[in-house]
Image (tube, rainbow, N blue to C red; front, side, top):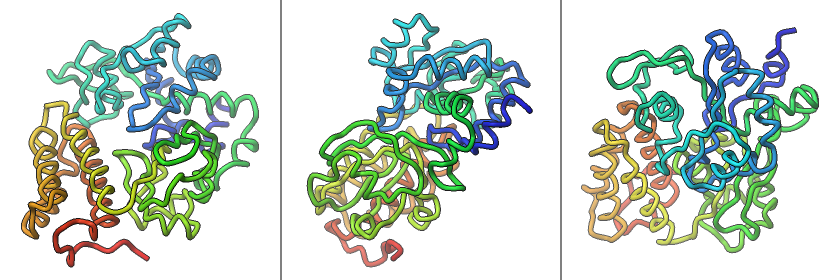
Length: 356
């Protein structure tokens, strides 16, 4: 049996949000003698599960990493508790700037090899040997999320059947979630795909107040109306697909109802506009323009023309940047328009309706 066959049989995919096959990535790493970066940055807004894994399961994740590569570095945000834990354990530490795009896979590869913590061009997967901004070929490098490596060790210790006893056939295994704003006991909890979102929130004692929506997966995700959660919608790819959402990074927050929902969205988009890597137009110019249009609409100074302009800009962002940051912001704002559009002080008769 191949060393990585149990991981493949278990159906483990990366727990960082992208959902790439862990077995295939491990095989590619071994075949290419790749360096391995453990991504413990908690790069998504509101995420804390990487810190949890490093604090409680660092030996296990390192054991899994050592089965994949002989050259291992742990990436963590500079001056974070996670970085301190890694340093005290005597492990090689890649200190990552506290910027949203800095913990993206290609940013970590660039930083490890002496470049800036900004995304490499998305032409080839780094495990095959990416190129830097000057066109120089970099050594093969692979990035694994901290939780993914811990799950690999669990599969080795407890077996495929144990792993598949959690979740769904399409998305098996336990998954950590971060419950943030609006639950009684915010923190990191063990959950699984297929759970009702209401039950996921109940892990943290449930919502403290009536909310307009549940925010899923931070800036890389979007929103679900609270009524759907009350009706039992599941944290499942099939249930989420009609709302352009995925399982994602497992961050859950509640969003206040009424105009406060747009204040929440405006703050997040303003943050996103300031997190540009400064290397391509969609981030440098597109995101600030989206934030400016949103300010006009939320403050009641915009009309239908501003709304239509915003929607055009959102359509131009995806697929044009060096990384997926502008794509994520576009999806995030589109989701907000679907769920909270009726709270904007502008006519919204042509806004897309949320599917029933």
